[in-house]
Image (cartoon, rainbow, N blue to C red; front, top):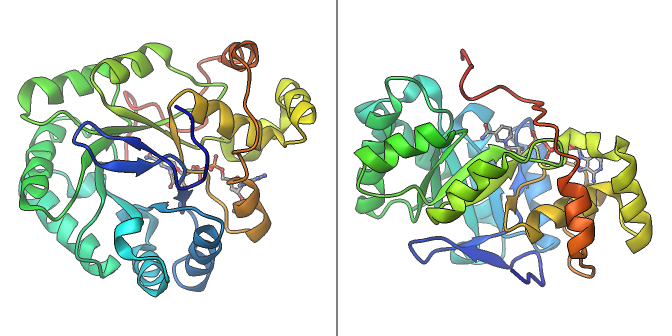
Length: 277
Ligand code: NDP
């Protein structure tokens, strides 16, 4: 788990390498804003971009990827099927729409955004079909609790390669993390810095002072050392750079434990067992 640069990766169970640090683009405006953010991120060494149909910026994301001087195969592009598109045929269609908006030949990872009751197994069937077609290099899920994952594992023929979940020092979900580890499902953190709220946690400030790092950097490093992929969002050049400046310090086992102990099971986003959108 010794990562030494922003482009270092974890290997998925199908052998695909997923860069451990990515740029989140939820709420980044399509057009100039998202393109500029991706340009700065790539300059800072990021090789992974996390978008979704519902973010409404796939066109700008694709444009930034296509305009980049980095070869396409060195970049890792992720999108997600939105809730209203779930079901077998509609997922196949939604994927094509996203791929067209991105203007790319293939996606690196496609995720089911939320486990829509009564639909996510059919959606997963379509994900498997897309994977077998070669249009996407890996498939996975997001916001799937253990029982959702168990359903997919039982009904499907491919174990999801990734589960993207809310994850930060106030929400660890250790048993889900272990379930994923045991099934070789890569865990990935959304809102990894609690939308900036980790700045208010004194322990993270204290550890940051020790290493001349910010609470945000300590938090991202903690997640990476736990083997969790992180996708902090920013549209600010300085913060994009700072969020990738994580590879010149290492938290000790004791410091990792202290951060683990901040867990309160506290969500800042919706509960996957209780959402209505
Ligand atoms: P984050 O925890 O990444 O926080 C982003 C916020 O923090 C922004 O307001 C950003 O502002 C600010 N910020 C970024 N860097 C710093 C810094 N160094 N210091 C202080 N503030 C900072 O939240 P997100 O909810 O955006 O999650 C990250 C990504 O995860 C999303 O963009 C999206 O790709 C994905 N996601 C997935 C979900 C899912 O259901 N699968 C749900 C939610 C998110 P600024 O831009 O001005 O820098």
